[in-house]
Every structure is written in C-alpha cells, then in structure tokens.
Picture 1 (spheres, rainbow, N blue to C red):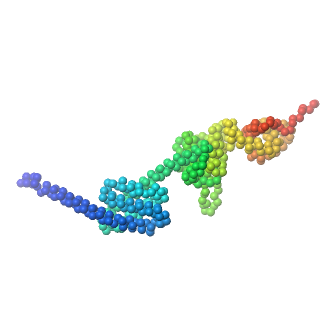
Picture 2 (picture 1 turned 180 degrees about the vertical axis):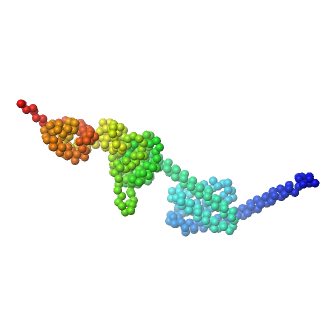
Picture 3 (picture 1 turned 45 degrees about the vertical axis):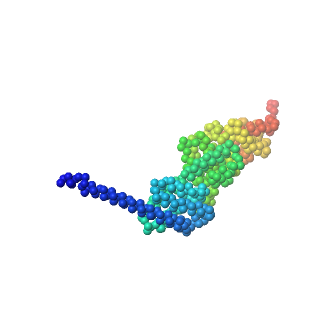
Length: 432
C-alpha cells in the first residue's frame, strides 16, 4: 500500500509530465500568436510610416520648415525605426545592432542639422503613432514598443555623445593650431577660416595674455569667466606656459543699461586666478585677431624677462617691461622706446631732451640739473612737466625714469651723429 503511494507510477509523477506538456502547449500558442502579430505588423508597416510622417508635419514645426531633402532623410530614419522594431520584436537579442542601424542610414549632415532634442521628439511621435494603431491588438506589442523606444532613445544619445566628443577633440586640436599660428606669427590665408570654424565671436581689439599653466587647469571655468567679462577666448597650453587670446565679444544689454567694455588690464586681473604661480604678462591691444601675433610677441618677450623686475605687478603689461626686453635684445622693444620717447621729445624741443638727460644723469635732482643747465629749478620742473605731457611718462618716478633713460640711450645710439646732451654750454670759470 505504501509502495503504491510513492512509487514511480504515482499520481505525483504523472502530474509532472502533464505540467511539462501543458507548458509546451503554451509556448507553442505564444509562438503562433507572435508570428501572427508579426505578420500583421509587417502588413501595416507602410501605413505606420505614412501616418508617422503626417504626424510629424502636424506636430513638429521644425520638421515642416526643413528643406525637402532633409525632410526625406528624417522620413528614412522614421521608416528605419519601424523596420528595426519589427526585427527586434522577432529577435529581441539584436537590440544593440538594430538600434545603431537606425541612425546609420541617416546622412552625416542630418546629425549636424537635427539636435538631440529633435531626435527624441521624432522617437516620441513615432511611438505614439504605433501605440494608437496597435493598442487594441496586443498588450505585449505595446510593452515591446515602450521597451524598444527606450533602447532607441539611449542609442540616439550615444550617437550624439560620440559626435560631440569627436567635435570637441577636433575643436581642441584646431584651437591649439590657431594659437600656435598666432604665437609663431606664421598666419596664412587659412587662418580666418580656422578661426571662423571655432565659432569665434570676438570683434575689434584683441590682446594676448601669457602666464604659467596651473597644476589643474579648468578650461571651462576660464571660458565662463571670459564670457561674463564680455570677451571671447582662445586657449593654448604649451607645456608650462598658458596663453589666452582675448577678443571683445558682443554683449547683450541688460535692462536697457548700456554695456561698458572693460579695459584689457581689468580683464586680465579677473582671469588671473586661472593661471599658475609666477608672472603674468599682457600684450598690447591690436585691431583684430589676424594681428594678434604682434601682441603675442610682446607678451612672450615680456614673460621671458619679467623676473628681472623685482616688484613687477601681476598682471603686468608687456610695454611696462620695455627696458628689460630691450636689454634682452628685443628689437621691437628697442624700436618702441625710440619711437615713443626719443623721437617725440627730439622733434618737440631739444631743450626737453637735454633737460631729461641732465635730470636722469644727476640722480633726479632738480638743483643739480638746474646748476648744469644754468637755469632756475622751476624751469626744470616746467620742462619735466612738458616731457610728461609729450610722451606720457613721468621722469620723477624711479620705474619710469629707467624706461626713459633706456629710451634716450637707444635713441642716441641710433642717431647718425653724436649729439651733446646739453644745449647750453658750460660757462668757463670766472677769474676771481
């Protein structure tokens, strides 16, 4: 009696075979149902594509405004999405390959003209149309569409992310090339087109800022700060040297208030935290970006000799380092000193040149200068004031005195004949 209860031929064993048979029947029925549903979806796929295109025209203004060729390309993507869903519904394991194939059919220019947001809107409209058509047919198809639309959305995000990454790397290389061309002065006919490709919005004056590269350079923070200051910026990293090419950009007026453009010196002070420790040199302003090489050469020359000025401010203008640059052999600095100091003074009055020479030679002493020139100290004061008015530098300050004395030396070396420093001749000693 016990054997008949637990033996191989017991009802429990027979029940297990029945359950297996029942499960096989269910799977068979599901396969038949799936095959019928798939055949029905293939029959209506053409109608789904037509309905999707019509819905796009009705609900998405950007699609209706597209040129015919691009609308056709978008339609191809939508059709590819419907076709790939049918393939995925038949074989869900093929999701990654099929989702990628949707966008492989799109022309390259379509990725540049259709944003990620618009692509996701396209996916949403396509799913809505398919949901409406199959809502009463099968709940499984609806669930499959929702799962597949999620995969397509992720695939779209991946496509645009890779495109953005590739564009970012290309922009970085192009920006480095442009900055290098500016620094070396090897600008060619292609430089303006390269600058335009970078999306440069600067206009008018440009200045170059040179300093040390920080241990952790935050390029995005530098760009955000520059935008707030109303300038566009090109960034170049050359080992331990960080170079910023600054150009004025159009600033939108806020609240009707007039937008005030900051001097480049103030802009450099605001950008100073983005540099590493050490000297920071600002080149002179030039009219346009294509002329930035002039500012770059001055800034680089100043950066190379900035340590020779013990108390150089940070940032310091390259033109404030003219004596150090001239001593280092910078021909531009030498010519600048002669053009800005020696020639204007010599053209204005020989008395001013003689007074300045004497004042500097005598340790900036009014009385000693007056005795050498046989004039009253007030006359010396007046002439020094005129010197400041003519050239913009005040000889009474120690730093500016160095600049002026260097200019006088260079100007005298460059003259055709040796000139006496003093206009008035010394009186011979009077016999007592």
